[in-house]
Length: 68
Image (cartoon, rainbow, N blue to C red; front, side, top):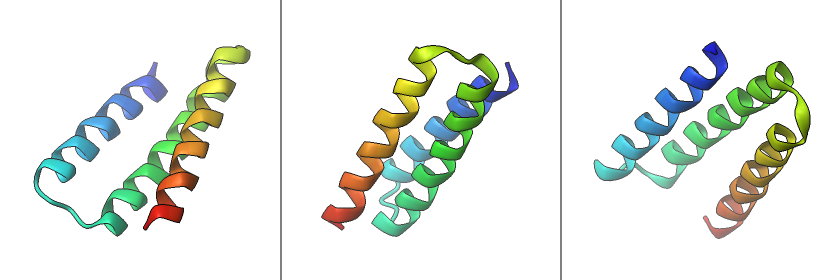
């Protein structure tokens, strides 16, 4: 449960930073932290759904870093 709460809090922080015009580098740092938290959640929850979510997030982060 702590893992899912951390993910939700991180998503809120990312949305707030985006609304406030944070730099791409700041947002990427937050996305990296989100990925770490998603990995922790996936390990705690187990199952294919968690692993797929982490992989999807990792792919999105890689695409965003290339676009920077």
